[in-house]
Structures are given as structure tokens and as C-alpha cells.
Amino acid sequence: MPERADWTIDQGWDRYTPAEHAVWKTLFERQSKLLPGRACDEFVDGMNKLPIGPDQIPDFRRLSEVLMRKTGWQVVAVPGLVPDEVFFDHLANRRFPAGQFIRKPHELDYLEEPDVFHDVFGHVPMLMNPVIADYIQAYGRGGLRARELGVLDKLARVYWYTVEFGLVQQKDGVRIYGAGIASSYTESVFALDDASPNRIGFDLERVMRTRYRIDDFQESYFVIDGLDQLLELATIDFAPLYDRIAGRPDHEPGTVLPSDRVVSRGTGQYHLERRNSAKASI
Image 1 (cartoon, rainbow, N blue to C red):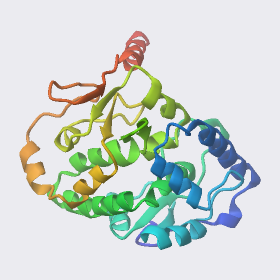
Image 2: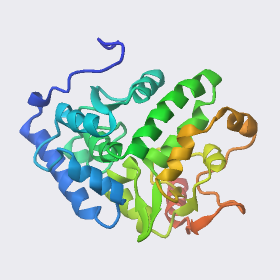
Image 3: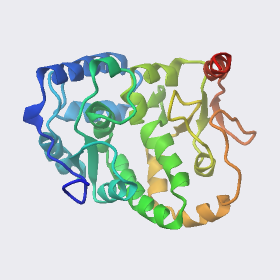
Image 4: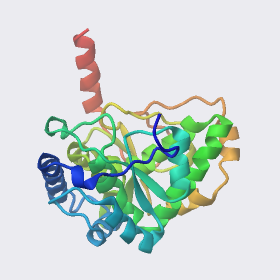
């Protein structure tokens, strides 16, 4: 069991090794070169205003000082994934739990558990935006309620397809705002440039009924019309939605429905090849 009930730990910034700072530098520099023209304006703006740079893993205390002044958020260190109720309680109180460890050099492109690069580089810049700041707090409160109602899987899909893997329509095109894409070298390209995935206009009920991939690139991405669309989600009562979709079938990740507003229809080629390869190896 953790020493503290909220699972927080000291970041231990002074204990990071030169090798760990070097991994951060590698990840930071290659994402920073890749994201111009891909990340949304709000991500870029947040990154520019935070004490985040290539040369060292950021100090959560310094990040929190800037965040607190801007949106009332702070970053707290945790050892990895935490129980749902702990996670939601942190978010509901404007505390973002971030893993304080960093991946090994051989894990640059894939990590099962979110580390400091995913959590800080991917998430924290967007927490500088008042809309995202309010939305994620509302999600924390909603998560506690969804857990009581036994519908957490439905709400988790909303977080997944927005905060983690969301795309947003800007005047100059579709851009990344989800942390899972923004912190991934390969998915930053796949999500925007590859012909394989579907890009579908965001619809709340549709998203709540759509499964997602945790082991590979997403088969579908949902595109919001602007960050203000998330403000609507922060204020609505989810209870009637849970009732409405109760017992209705889930959609597979790559399904395109007749009712979808399709931004771009994918070929599905990438995941088809992956499935065929898996069958051939059996």
C-alpha cells in the first residue's frame, strides 16, 4: 500500500540521473520538431508559457507555480497508475497526477504505463487552457459519480477519445490536442496523415458506445469543432445519457455508422494488415 492515501509521492527531482534527463531530451526534441503544424494552437501556447525545455525533466513544483496562477491546477507525483477513485478525486480538485519515472531508452515509442514524458509533455500544456482545465475537473467529478452508477466504462471512453486521443478542427485544418497523440512520435503522424484511420465528428453518445484500442494506434479518431465544445460536456447531466444507452450494443473501434459526420473515412488498411499478420502467425 502507498504511504499516503492519495498515492502521491515526492517527485525526487534531484535523484534523476543524467541518463534519465538524456531520455527526456531525446523525446522532447523529436516531438518538438514534429508537432509544429500538427498540435493545436492551445497546446503550442501552453508549452511556450511553461517551464518545460529539452535539457532536463521538469520540476513539478515549478510547473505547478505557473499552472496555479493560470488555471488553478497543480501537478502531483504518483508512482504510476493509481486506483480510479484516487485519480478522479485528484482531477476533481484540480490536481493532475503524473508518473514521476521516465521510460528506458529502448522504450521510446511504446510504454504500457504513462511516464513523466507522456503526463507532462502530453497533458500539462493543455491544462494551461481554461476550457481544458474546467473540462478535466468536471471529468473527475463525473468519474466519481459514474463509478457509483456502475457506468465508468462509458465515461472512460469520453476521456480516451478527447483528453488522450482527441483531434480538433482549426481554421487551418485538423490538429492534435489529445495527450496520447501529442506525446507519441508515431501516432502524431498516424492520426493526421495516414489513410487508415477514420476521423469522425465528435458525438457524445456515439463516443460513449465506442470501444477503443489500448494496444495500438486508434482505428477511429473523433474531431471536435473547437475546444469550446468540451465546455458543453463539462456542464451537462450525464445520468439521462447513461439511461439512454443502457443495454444498447457497443460499436467496434473501426466502425463507421450511417449517422456519422465523417471528416475523412479511413481505409482500415493498417489494422487489417495487423489482424491478418496475427492470424498467419497462429
